[in-house]
Image 1 (cartoon, rainbow, N blue to C red):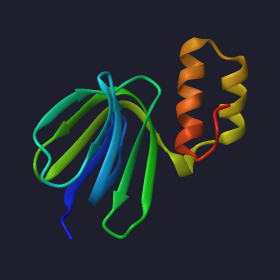
Image 2: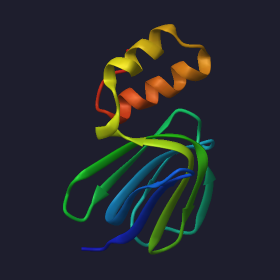
Image 3: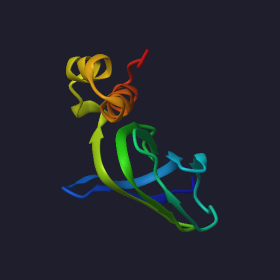
Length: 122
């Protein structure tokens, strides 16, 4: 099975690092799916986006990502986010409150947090 090295890093910490078979990210140009052997790409991540990683063990890692960049080579993917939260760490109740009561930026972040945690933002 082909694999690639993936790092998901935010300014404050490294969220996840390991090997994966597939990565999906939301960039300013649209959603991109990356598999091992992908052409080199540098993309700007959207505010309030989600990055999904399928590990070589078949596990799924999701993170709410707010700004930053995605760098892809044939055998590696680096997600360098301004801020990010793993789906398993997200307080769903707080995100739902921010979705209904926050300003536009807070709502975008809350929607991404809910999607990364596996909940509907609707």
